[in-house]
Length: 128
View 1 (tube, one colour):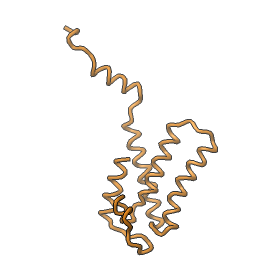
View 2 (spheres, rainbow, N blue to C red):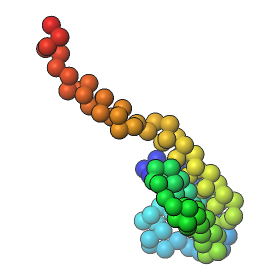
View 3 (cartoon, one colour):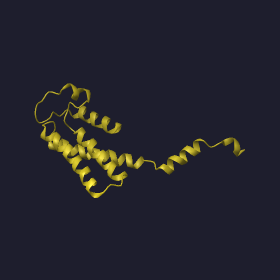
View 4 (tube, helix red, strand yellow):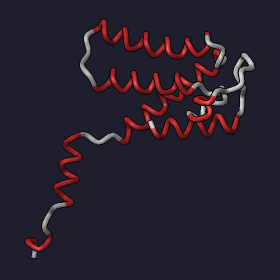
């Protein structure tokens, strides 16, 4: 999530695209660094979180459908509220999936973590 927050905020500051309705950002928008429209931060995080949960939890099919529907509705709600263009939402979803894929490639299994911990606690004095 930290990678997503930093990437989205950086791209938003670089592109500086305003939303479709010229609404001045409120206090909470400024605090959340959500003053620009491209890419949609809500869509990015919803895509990343839903993909993470779908990949790492065993869920019944109705719950899987609800999770995907939730992510789509998060993105669409931002478009309907006039905060984002449709392309902002699509690029936000793409960024969320990209961040998930990046984290999944460096994700360590619990076995790998246990091995690293055991290497760190290995006593080299007994080797001599």
